[in-house]
Length: 324
Image (cartoon, rainbow, N blue to C red; front, side, top):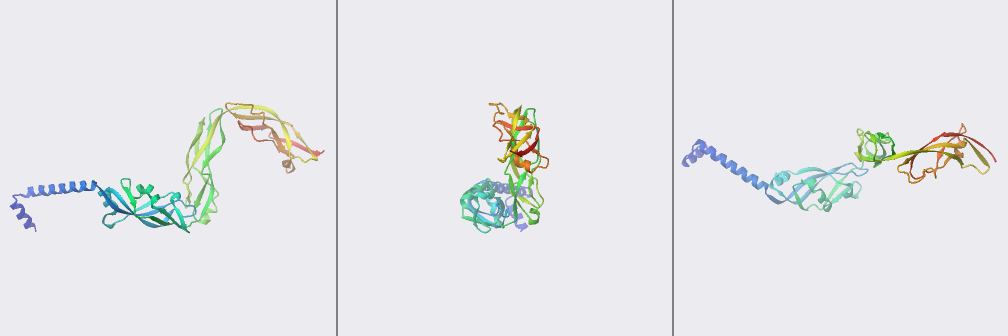
């Protein structure tokens, strides 16, 4: 065979160096032609094997089966080869929203071709345009797993600028998560912690995202929660307020010593009305009957609008009960 090529090159008047240059030129021409054609757009049927990931309560987050997704697509020749060349099918794990997973029966869920459209870029890639899906419905099986719903316990350390304070507690959303794992381990978990939040010199509302602390061997329905806290400027107002007795039987009377208490309230700024006008203090007769010391805690009725917090001095008072 080598003699045949040698005689051919000699008949064309090509020397050893000339035919090497010719072969190189042919190789470059073929490469240019191939790159050009692979960059052109083509219409073709592409197939991808899809494993579904979905956060369905009470079920595994990964499907136990795969589905063949077939679609008529328009894309480059390169992608046609990359996705389905020589019978090799691409495999993908695609995360689906629980809202598009329809329950069929038991552990079986399905997704329709119309809902698949919004996941086309995850299945075939960003540079592939899906004209239509030949697969009408995909059916996945998500086996049942042990689960338990527990509250989220936020961990935080906050400080404020002078004359600023929080209004209420730090709120997290969602305030509970579902845990999946071994039944024995789930029984010993009563709540999950967030990663610590540390902020200082606060003078305005805060919000953001807090990751949850991972628990070895346990899967959580959420990896993070949103948090928010209202911060306001305040002013302090003090006053001396009468203490009343509540829930006293008709045939009894209750003497409170002392009968007045000093109240310090923190009010949101600016103050639009007298916040102490609707504030009243009380002690509960029912608490007295269960008290061994004869003392009752001084409490406030529902705080008037504008009061963020209050403190009372003394916080406990002596109570004497007698017949009328």
